Amino acid sequence: MIELWELIGQSDRRYSTFSWRSRMALRHKHLAFTTQPVLQTDKAAIAFSGGKTVPVIRDSATVVRDSWQIAEYLEQAYPQQPSLFGGPTGKALCLFFNTWVDRSLMPLAFRGLACDAIHIQDPADQDHFRATIEKFTGGTPDSLKLEQAKTFERLRAALDPARAILKRQQFLGGSEPCYADYILFSMFQWARIVSPVPMLPPDDSLQAWFERILGLYDGYARNTLAFY
Image 1: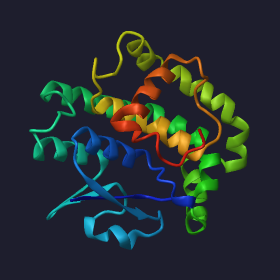
Image 2 (image 1 turned 60 degrees about the vertical axis):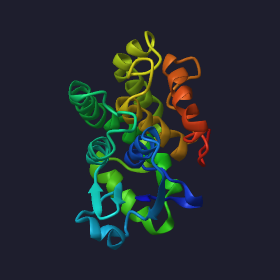
Image 3 (image 1 turned 90 degrees about the vertical axis):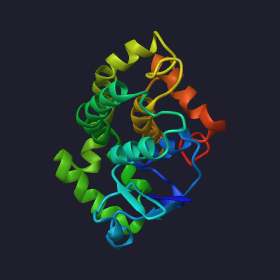
Image 4 (image 1 turned 30 degrees about the horizontal axis):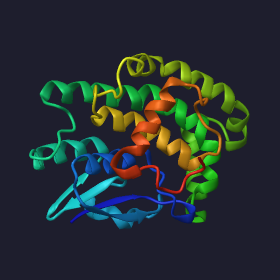
């Protein structure tokens, strides 16, 4: 069975944005897997992967690190299962989308959510996470909390391209989800796990799409410890 190493916070919160991309890719492929929790500061637990970050999967003798590379591996290793990309052109477009989310949206999301995310970290990780916040934002959790509402406004504006598409179709992949859906979904899933403050108002058109993803695979993503 496939094993997935992912970050863990207090009360067994599985909060990693990137691990949720791999979780949803595995569910999309109808592949059974188990999860192995890892603290941010426990680099020894994933030393076998040759890297210092999660997610990591081990499938028999094959070890793959990084959510995008995991998606590529699953698509190649299990071609008989539902496609994550819908072919080479779809894969190329998903890679573009992956890069857009990581470079344009995730920095804003981190700036808006880190002030709450620090409170769900395991005590062993809190100093490390605080240093990460200061390194990547130049602020402290308290200063970022004061800016949170304004940061969320900027993030909602940056989401307009996705919002426009999802007014016309059920998923980014069309009538069915593809890996691009899981990339964007992972950011919102991270938000609901680490913060009691929703990034989206209830009437935002993206909210209906988010609820559809939460309901996939018998409510798999909904059934995790979260604030809302």
